[in-house]
Image (cartoon, rainbow, N blue to C red):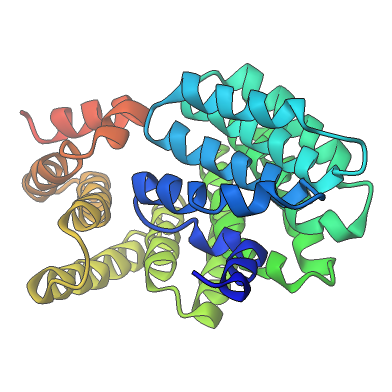
Length: 307
């Protein structure tokens, strides 16, 4: 590999954070020898932060912390961006291992440091939305997501605009938790708008599902039913044409089935509710994260489906 290609890859190492975490770790690790030769160790330390996250995604939490410890030893005062990212990824490693109090501590530290300069706005938005994820109270989640959105909309750093769709989705989910369904509907609609601008079909479908969920909360059951039925047709097409991996289809389609079960339950159509609850359980029970994060929803499907 020639020197110019190496330099190009070092300049854009974040682009390698795609795909399987095993591949991410390997591809980023291949850049370390070249990065380590530079007198300015900032990029080297930032790469280590991303390697640690990839390791955490593989459940290698002790190794991930060791990687961050190695980077921490090399930190110098001038490496502000590296410090921001090391704090952020330390938080993410704790988050991955369900140690949410520790995660919150490091996310806030990263936020407090990055907010001091507009050049770090991208990472300030990142830290804000991670604080919202681990914050215990719904109102706190809403506050932090709004803070992230306000900065992402106002900053001159155009990279932040990519955050708007996902963070509006998170905010909308917070409103659902708070039973503020009109606010949730508006936030999901904004999520859809931003996703459409970027052509992100997965986020668009998620936003439409959320709009249907909010409409159910507002007791607009026929409108909610139309949205979910249209989504179900889309997932059937995606499945038939093999446009997505089956594990993604199980989750997306399963969530639609879940909503259909709840809508028909609200309409007092027990037979239809039972049918879709069983279909939802069949799909969603295949996903380990759904079972781990939403046990009450899985139990609800068992009850509706009379399983």
